[in-house]
Each structure stands twice: as structure tokens, then as C-alpha cells.
Amino acid sequence: MLDFLYTAVSWVLLRWHSLFTAIGINPDSGLNWSLSIVFLVITARLLLFRVFIRQVHYQRRMQEMQPKLTEIRNKYKNDKAEQQRQMMKFQQEEGFNPITGCLPMFLQFPIFIALFHVLRHLSNSVVAAQLYQKNPAAVTPEQLHQLSLYSFTPAETSSAALAKLFGAPLAGSLHDSAVHIRLLGGDVASTRTVTLILVLISASATFFTQVLVRRAATVTPEGTAATVQRLMFVGIPISVLFSGFFFPLGVCLYWFTSNTWTMAQQLYINKFHPHAKSDEVAEVGAVGKTLAPKPGAKPQRRSAIDLSKDASGPSASDSGADSVNGSEPASNSAPKPGARPNRPGSPKPGNRPNNRPSQSKKRR
Image (cartoon, rainbow, N blue to C red; front, side, top):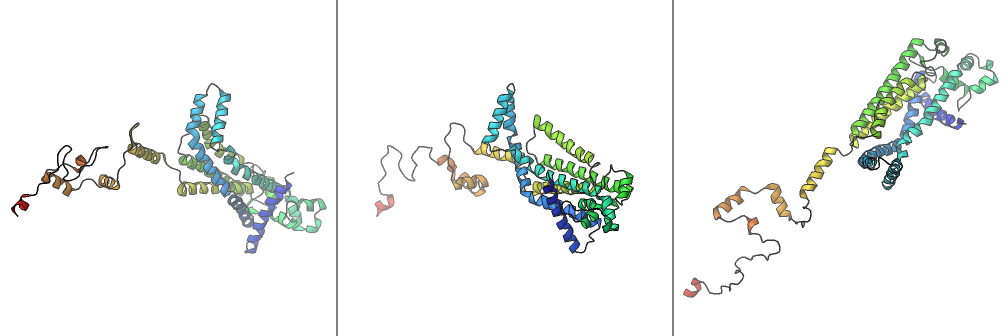
């Protein structure tokens, strides 16, 4: 039923294998097949990079929505049906789609399953592969068909089934018996050691990725979200560690590359696309509250000169001149709001203007 998926993944794997063969790497070496698996992961992750960015936006959007969701939970805590309706309504109003956060995992899972199936197929074809390498003419039609599945030629299937990385066959796993590991042409101790190291590194990379995600969070989750986060923080690395004992070495190599890539992506996002920090938001909010007028008061417009004076403060020469001349500060001589400005030399209201000539004019 999923043969088309197995064929597609095998085709990408074989294209990388052909490329590394063209640049001079032995086609039957474990290095060639290991690099092919690594670049299969890189190909998939590059295609899914934009989806990963959307997942990051989803996580940040979810963090921003947590206070409102918590308020809805507390308001309708006695009516679960109404609580769900209000939460769905709020998410629809905000244009929030929970499926977006799960897309990278869903899209990677078929590739993982396909590679697992192909490697298990290689492990089961080891007898036919050994026979084909010794004497291709002795292979039965059934064995030849077994060696020709999923875009592989019989020669490529035989090469991949017997490929080894540091003495450990790529088709072998930790739970395989010593007899089966030797049948694959591998060393038992090397298989156990190499596979265990890859599994431990994969679990560690997954754990540190969870740490980076928690550090990038700006809002502390509450309630069910906090419980789910704690379970994921511990559960995902443990599941990687446990599953590594049953997967072939090639799948563990795929997992190691994928988890390392995810950790590097999270480091890149945290460094070059950081989220607004809570203390910065609080500082901006405090400035806004300080500059805002009081409730019911009319906003007071201030000129650029007043703002520059406030920023630089009164100069020493101005203060000295005011003290010598005995004049009041300029702010006290300014008219009150709604009053007419006082012109220099103009008479006070009710007084007649002084039109008499000066003493010097009389003497003339």
C-alpha cells in the first residue's frame, strides 16, 4: 500500500549514493551509504524549513494566547462544554490553527517509516545479497525479485545490505542476535557500541532542543499546557532512547542527523529571530503609562523645544541670568491655557495706552 512512498525515499537515497560514487567514494563502503542517509535527512529538512518556521510562529502565538485561554478556563471552569466553545471561538477569531504546529512531525514521519521499512528489507535480504555477490547466476528468480524492490538494482541492494559503519552493519540493530549480526558481516561489539553512541547522542540532542524551546518561551504555560510541556520535556528524549534499541543502525543515523538538525535550527531561531522579552515589553508599557494623560484630562501638546529642554535640562547660563536679573522662569511668565498672550509693552486691561512723548522729545 505504501510502496510508492518506499520507492520515493529509496530514489532520493540512491541519487545521493550515485553522487558520492561519482566523486570517488567506494560505492560498497559504509561511508557512502551513511552519507547518503545523512543527506536524505538534509534534503527532507530543507524542504520542510518553511514549515518549521511556521511551527515556531505557532509556538510563539500559543504563548501569547495563554493568558486569555487561562482566563477563559477560569471563567467557565464549571461548564466544560461552554469552555471548549469559547476557546474554539477565541482561536478562530485570532486565526489560530493548532494543526500548523504538528505539520513538521507529521511530514517527517512517513520518511522515517519508509527508511525503516527499506532497511528492514535490506536486513531480510542479506542471504540473497551474499549469494548474489558470490555468484549472481546462482540467485533464484524469487531472490532476484527480492533484491530489485523500491528502485534498487540487485547490485545496489547487495551493497547496501552488507554496508558497515565502523564495523557495524547499517541494517543491524541492538536487539539483533549475535548470529544475525555476523550474518550481516558485522562485529558484535562494534555494532553494540556504535549504535548505542548514536542513540545516546540522539536522545541528548532531543533533550537540549526541548531546553532551547523552553528558554525561548516568553509566557510560562499554566494548567494542562504546563503538564503537556513537562511530559514532552522528559518523555520525548526517553522515547528516543528506548526506541533506539529496536531500530536498525541506519535509522538511528537518520534520527541522529534529524535531531541534531532540529537543535541547530532552534539555536538559529533563538539567536537571529528572538521573541520580544517580557522585561522589554514591561519597560515600553511603563513609558507609555508615564507619557499618557490622566483619565478625563485633556492631552497637553508640547513643542519640540520643550521636549529638547526636558531632555537636556536647564543650562547653567540660563539659571545664572535669571538669578541676576531677578526675573522669574519662563514657564511662570507663559499665559495660562485659554488666556490671551501678554505682548511686551502693552497696557494692562482697563488702562489707557501711554502716548505721551518722552523727555528727550520735549527738550527738542
